[in-house]
Amino acid sequence: MPRLLLLLAFWLPLASVAETLQIPLGEQGAVAGQLPVRGESQRAVLERFGLADEEHPAVGQPPITRWDYREFSVYFEHNHVINSVRHHQPRAAMPDKESP
Image (tube, rainbow, N blue to C red):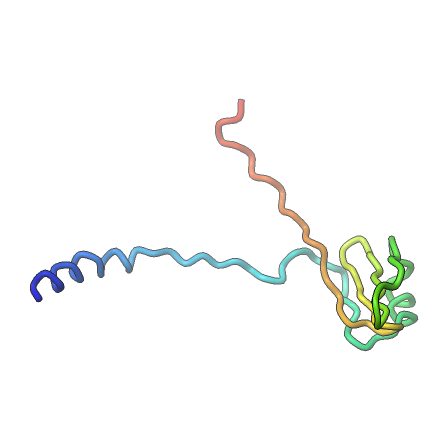
């Protein structure tokens, strides 16, 4: 029993030294305005955001189509939005401290 208490007394302070790492989810990039929402028609997306940079043909059953814009992609089932996804925007690399 004394060994257990000694072991707990040794490990307990180490647990309180841990740091909290917070990763902001969903902050991949700033898109002007809102993304297209589920159920919105292709025509409404076209009117609101203009022509896509690239339109991928329909695949599968039901047909799923993807429109790629500069900062996000929109997925359609038939002619209605099922999902909108922001593209990853990598942050600028930190310069090395030891660079000449």
